[in-house]
Length: 271
Image 1 (tube, rainbow, N blue to C red):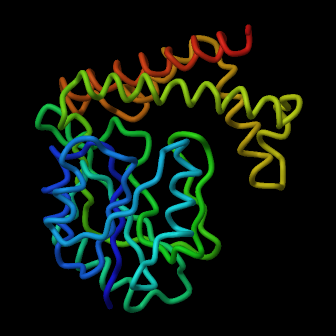
Image 2: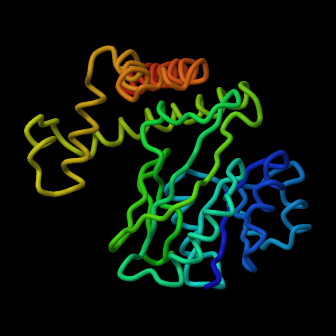
């Protein structure tokens, strides 16, 4: 079973060659670009990839537009970022799943994030992501760190998707997460405008999935000392200390990122 590939890019000349090499087995690779001004497009075309460009607005809108408008050759699509690499084991598992999906319309894969030469095996909140899917059965929600929602049963496959979030250096990671924190703060403010009054009861008892998720997120957003709680959750609760120096540094970076969100949310709501 052949599978189409979609890679989201914005100035990815550093990481794109390795990403494309890891999915070179596909005969339908699409680079979905946000008007890069480096060699990203040149690299994509040299590799034989199809290029589609669109101005980036927010993550959910951008990804949803791509699934609805890119002309994929095959019914199954695998989504990958430029700083990710598909392992041979995952490639084999993806092909097998697409050939015999059963009732599933999408599949989760396990991602390994690397930092300081270490697999962050413990400190991540969740290593599983919906990446193989029928595009007509998938949609995304949220301005940043979008939630993947499949319209049907979801399966899980073996193999690893390797991720190198610090491949462009700490400055790039910090700049990107500064941008992400702005969108997160906007998302929180938008949710509060649209979701009505917060209810602790609904956070645990609401029958509607979206209602429950809204109130659960609001519960987390209202916790005092949220950046400290996030550090403790990742470093102690998720046993990030087992990842050594990389785990400690990553947990601290995530708590700083959370503090950016707190400060920017306050600023938006005070305006």
